[in-house]
Picture (cartoon, rainbow, N blue to C red):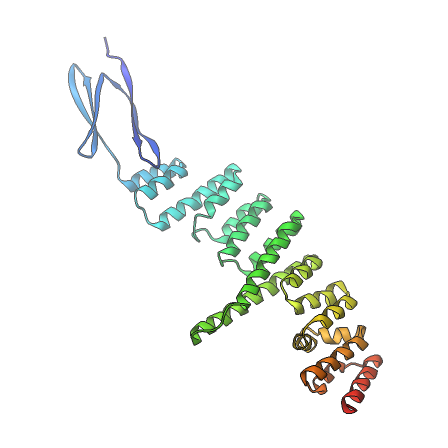
Length: 332
């Protein structure tokens, strides 16, 4: 009678992966051996002995087969082992992320997307996560984008909106604190050295401060002015802190008290700054502002006239204060 057919499987084992390279039913199989880059199967057929060669496909064909079968994890392992270019591996991670999104495995999808090193456009990942309302996973991705220096203004805005939508005040405050800390570290960097080094340091300070300002402005717009004020104060950004107290929280007494506690040169800079804090405080805490001006003039030798522009108002109380300051200035 006919010989019994046997299931013959060729399993490929590497340190990184294990895969079935061939599987078939064969009659009268007796030996399987490896040699000369192939596998050799000895079996009987039609009363005689036959030797069948099982030749491994080339790396590209194997990769195409794995992708077609959507075995992306194996495809990635194979591409790495076979020495494929980074661009191919990153594209495989992107495809794997898309596949995991379809399956609803959002955290695993994010891990795959983060391996793309820019091969996946941020808009592609953001749209995929937003379409499934995965705000927590999206915030993780946006944070990584920000940490890698690849985040744009719209990504920052979206990240803050995610925190607000999730009512995740802790993450919001942590993010603001880290942004403020980077700005403080940049401004405190030793600027001694070559002219080129000093230029790079100044540029880093400017970028870090601009990033902090943009982040805090977004936080204020989202309705978390108190958090923004606390972070600005903790990291010594006094003008931003005073701006929030005056413009958002309307805590003028607290603002003038903090302004009075600053060194004279800083207080003077805030009063004359572009944010208009001096004019706002003058209309609310006029006597204390004029007293502060007098202190700065006495201690720093500043000409009183530098403050006169703050009184450019039709407010009668402001005009009286100007008269008081002028009388003091010219009667010293």
